[in-house]
Image (cartoon, rainbow, N blue to C red; front, side, top):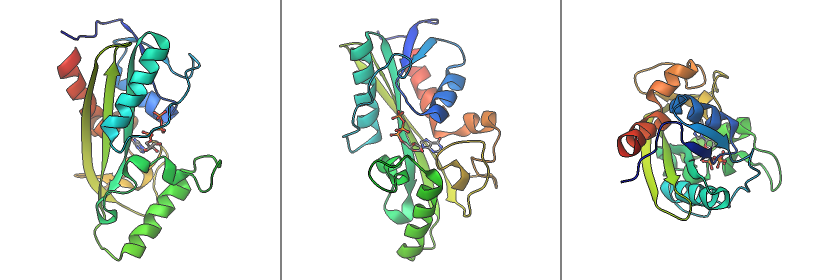
Length: 202
Ligand code: ITT
């Protein structure tokens, strides 16, 4: 049976500091984690069409390169009126032109412009987080969590990262960017995916 023992050394296969912070909080000190960045692991191209596919690809690459069990996160914002965009391209929507750094103020404005162009009054959206744990040259376990809500413009709050300032989770009036990090960690797509991972692996 696949299990992760407390104190086990894991690579967190992410180069995104906002995600790394939330993953560390959600793991709550249970494992000894090192980041892919600190091990100098390369960032693989995310060539899959699904969150699960990309999470597995990233976990597999980090596990095989490091010889350690690796955990990876692939996530993004899906806007219903945009047919699920930006979805798996959420990070890419933040790049204005080839080679430019990611700019999420630009990405959020791009979502707003696309919604205006769609003519739809529907502002519903959801975040998805796929988590994958891979053993070096071995098996992989993947799970997915989602949180539903709606989009609100202009962006509000600077406590999260990425698209947090425009996402209002169901049952709240505040954006993820305005929530205390512990409040986001209690209800987020990432927290729900972690719940499933815990059921499966520890
Ligand atoms: P790694 O692949 O190195 O983990 P990344 O930022 O490239 O980092 P993704 O390919 O999964 O990760 O991109 C998903 C983007 O979706 C990410 O850059 C965020 O901006 C956004 N996103 C994911 N989870 C989010 C969250 O909880 N709040 C706000 N935005 C989020």
